[in-house]
Length: 206
Image (cartoon, rainbow, N blue to C red):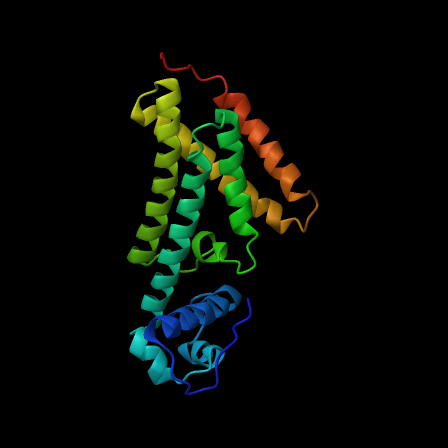
């Protein structure tokens, strides 16, 4: 990700400055990890002084958590959008959900690393936010399963968690293989695998 920083000292509306700082911070955190990144690096990347950075974020952790919140919300919405297709078949919804994870890991900003490869999971607020994301995605999938199959909430959540985990882990594995398989083919393989099991669930009575 390239940050086009304005000249140092240039005044910007607060919301634009905050967005600029978050963009710069994400580049640094993704490249270096939380522990190796320094506020000096982020300020330099953004083209501002450290006091300006601290005016918006009191510390490095608060900056990281703000980024994490934004990216978790992005992935959660991608999954919910994949499921929110009233006229799509259930298989199509499974495919759209799997594809949402593959699309997320291939974004140019590599934001998925903040969530799935964080070196800060021992910090309670970071671990809690990542766990909340995982649960939100699993619950969204489970709601569709319950509505279609009539399974109770606990059993549907178990399956929803399995699909979310399968999509996330395989998407990251695929990305690390340097395009050995195309994204569409990889997502299709995982969709077929998931659907072989989920397609056998009972259907709810109309």
